[in-house]
Image 1 (cartoon, rainbow, N blue to C red):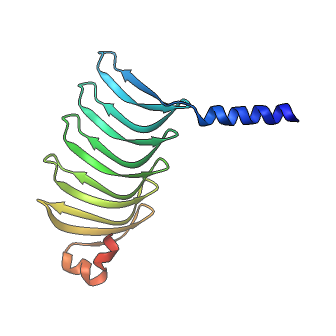
Image 2: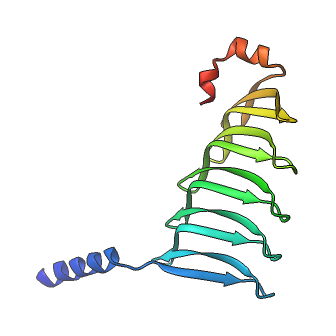
Image 3: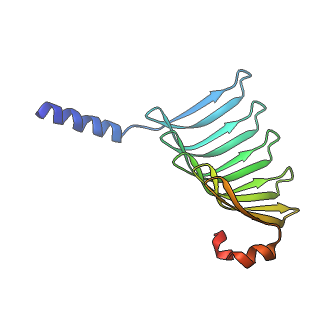
Length: 158
């Protein structure tokens, strides 16, 4: 019994002190494809991914190969495309989506990678409509801010 306990304690201690290593991958053209930290053969901590033209594609954090915390995504031209929260590898909370001029064109509440809550649409930085979703299914849409506020509290948007 003692050898088994010793082996378990040794394994736990080795695992606890496993080192993070910094890893870089490259495209065939020699340009950087991704870079970030690996622990126990899984992505962890902060990572960056690139297009084959060298521009940043996305950046964010991992925990055991699953996206967590706040991520940003960019177009192939390098402009901000979208940004938002991940939890356990799934999009959650508020996400912002940008037009070609990097102005917000919509922001949506997500849960488990689907719209779940409010989705606000903008044009020229002005709110033009709002919708409410549950598990990806649209429940209602409002085409004026007055109609929206008549049926909803602004505190629901937090």
